[in-house]
Length: 330
View (cartoon, rainbow, N blue to C red):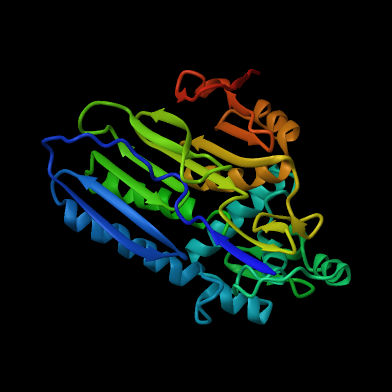
């Protein structure tokens, strides 16, 4: 017997107090999820529409399911010319893949597809099928020279682990250029704050309880511009014969990641980085994720393991509210 489950909204619980500033809000569907944009100040409606248009245009360029997109064409043909923006994003993704030791891998798309997460035709593949698909997985299968890309051995790429964070980052930059002083973008599990909250308080971001998604397990306070991204095994999964299989794949094993973590939240200045690292650290597991953080200086993290223990890096220790947690120091 197979049971399907989706938790489309991960971090959108925000404490927004009333304020005098005018505002506008837009809700729309893009990149396979519901997105919410709230902007304060002059021209708020126009800026909301500009954000929506920017994300929809990015989706057309980066989608693997829209056959006419440059990325889908690259996957179909094995080589091709990417638009400047898609090529730059692929370069950044390959660099982050190298930095994380391959736990973030754009070619893991073939694994995700094998398990049915791209088509919603979920299945547990055989060991032979997994061994075969691993032959086309690995960042070394991608050659990028400027905007010219080549995929070797039948490899295919997908920006699913970074696209929403990148989109939020690009929209935040556009809003700043438009003079927007306060905005909140909720792109499923990707939250992007822009500027100061109009009522002068901190932005309050909820982290969903991975064991009971109807509840909040912690609250994070952030000020100014920040990207807050969560990846969790509870987001999207199916159940077959009493076994749960989630969508975050380990590119080394070809199977759903079994790292001991159930939720990873990254806080960074860079939306692309926060999105990619939320997946990469989830695949790493607790010990390697902590070591990776200690060797870095561009993000903070909240890690929740399968026992329910919450680990918070020291940069967030005075920014988190929850019943009990352990602080990770350098």
